[in-house]
Length: 101
Image (tube, rainbow, N blue to C red; front, side, top):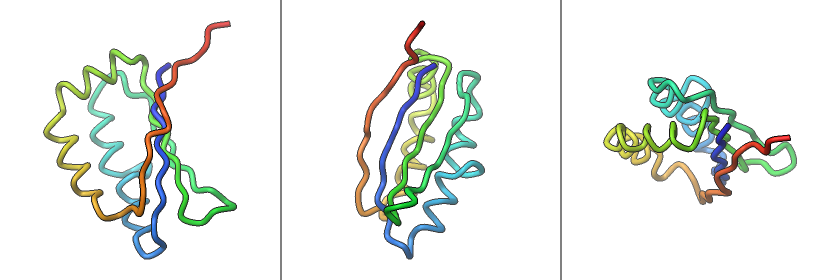
């Protein structure tokens, strides 16, 4: 499993649009879902810090994600552009893989 985690700070007045774009029925998930290696996205809101969100995007592997990025660069850029101005900040926390036991 390959997971990409982003952190966002969203002003309250932009939260509904942000949640729509990044949520389980949003544009990002619809784009990701067109690719076989995509396993799901979780949008998390920090209960102690209003406006602080995490997204966790789950893929079969890094290769699946990289294939998606190579084949959907234009659509990715379009949706990324649609999200401009919705956040006060965004930070990629990292790219993680599961640890075999």
